[in-house]
Image 1 (cartoon, rainbow, N blue to C red):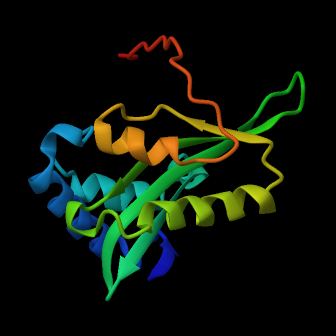
Image 2 (image 1 turned 180 degrees about the vertical axis):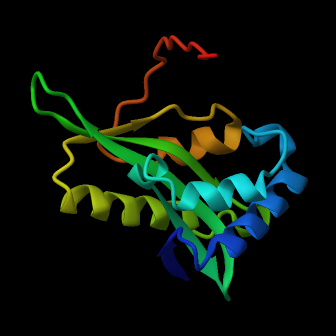
Image 3 (image 1 turned 90 degrees about the vertical axis):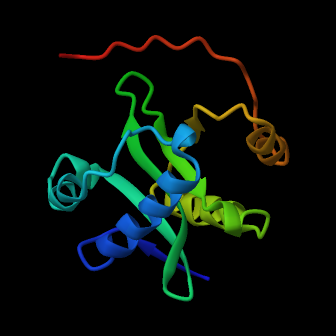
Length: 150
């Protein structure tokens, strides 16, 4: 298993992974289709360069990823990370890949002096089993306000 940061050189591998994920579990994806050109242009867009995607690769194929970004609070100086997405292909689950992705992510957090991270977790049975094995975490039901800007 190798881990790589998503970039111009491995974007085609990433898109191939998304195609498999979309075909296997379209109901768990946040998009309705894969915008290949949009993804390729976002790789070099300075706005999206603040988001990191770590790809888990097995035999040269992307089998999982974790995507996140860092930010801070001016008032108290807290340095935080938000995990946008974690997903492992169905055929590669229960092999420790997601745990290893979180380890890679936490290593980056430590290098950047991040105080805490959070995510909005999936609530399906498989995801719940995964998150219940985390140590030193709080699992809450947090109210979320979401507004889509036009």
